[in-house]
Image (cartoon, rainbow, N blue to C red; front, top):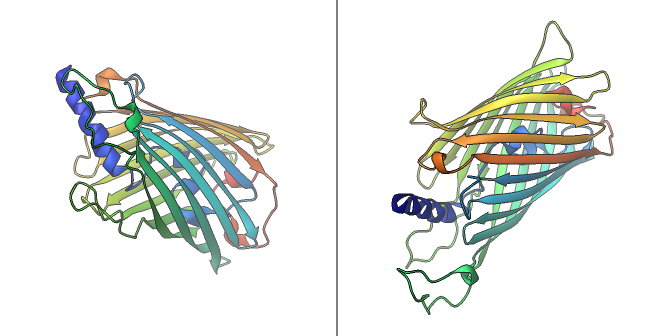
Length: 327
């Protein structure tokens, strides 16, 4: 148990310093919400799209990471979209909250071949604090350090930028997140000043030859963190089945690995979702392969959403790659 406690303590501190790099991306983006990945998706589709996401990591372990987030994007002109996202993240005795404002513009590269290019920009406001009021004495630490007199809160501003290329049913997005450096405490020496991280997301929507109401969507998501050069890749697959009214359900799976350990999965899990009359519900599960796997029941994620105020654009550049954008 002592080894487990030390391992959990290490993870909590490591993730506490890593939180400001980027909130953890599990499979939120696969819950019919590509806006999670990139601001370039703002305004693509016919609706005001709202998604509320709840994620609990390592269920069964006390004070495990927990996250709630809200995403909304909509079109404000024929070829322009805006979006907003907000989150609340808890990790042990650390708290982080933030909001992101996004803008995207979509262009037609070639109308006949259905080639489109989108550019996106986000402004981020983040607040990070430590809940010192939850600190308790232990047998090994009988007195709380009297020098701890505040919550060590800090706020920072940053920007994300990216582009999205679509060619018929193929899509490729590339993003640079948090490209401004952060002020750090020179005496601590543990905080990363480089918050920059890169994300690439690509996939293809394949319509069944035997059934026009069925789609297959393989996709890949790549993350690279500039501060410590670590990276990971998701390999995903989704199956969608539509009815004549445009409602549908999907099932899928995601496999995540560190890029230097392809055959050693980091996360693995199934997912499923359904839409009915502009209402969306999705669930995803991820099993983490590490020393904590025997002490928890995995990571659980629930997403609910609404698609409101349908209005078709006169510009084909807001067309999505799947039927799920148009219901």
